[in-house]
Image 1: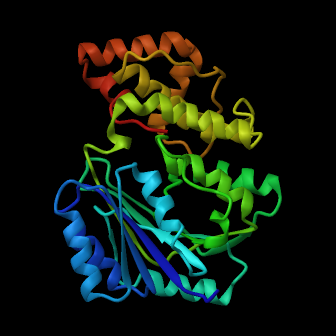
Image 2 (image 1 turned 45 degrees about the vertical axis):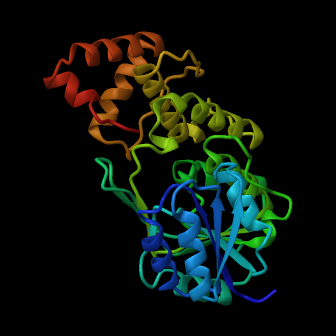
Length: 322
């Protein structure tokens, strides 16, 4: 299998952004692009076929609608290159992204996964950049895999800003019908990997989508349960000090569930430790969480939001994330 890269692009109801997406990928060093038309009811099937006619690197799969996971799995069955990555059809790849990453993988063929920078939620209120240092980590042991996950990978387990050795997917596929498929599949891929790399080069452009799964607050309980399921599978004790940052993330999701939905869910309670990495806002929020306890903290939080009290409560609560 040669050192080459295939890009899988699932396509569904993105006729306004599809050309932009494909053009951005073609401007990069890719050997193959697989467009997976997931039964899109708009002009996407025609756009895909038009691209395949004029660009030999592009092939098209037309299938009945089965969701994002099913579309990615269909694309994976057609991959014949050593490396594979994914791009959503409403996103873009910045110029000169893939070439330095392929060079890195060529020089270090033992790397199984490489993660690169991303501009997240472009156009949204919470737009931010995800950056990395250049590093290669041996994750052959379970403890190293857990360490990588706890070192904030749980917070950026996006599939699209990573390049994978295709062999990782031989016995692993995206779970059809499951929400937060990226979160669920990443730990499984980590288990098959021996070396995980991060790069400061390249940029994935992740556009904000107000109708996307991650923007639907009613889906938050599934996200919480997915994270808890992963902790169980990876033998991570969320009550331990080493899982402090992960626990903070779970608390934040739990707060949003209580804030935006009427869905009843649960999260084990424990006091949260302070660390030098915390902001002053986070410290205030943690102090109240520890002092009041989980249930009373949530009740006060929702009450203050409901009453729209500004000043001090707004400073403490509004827009705060762990």
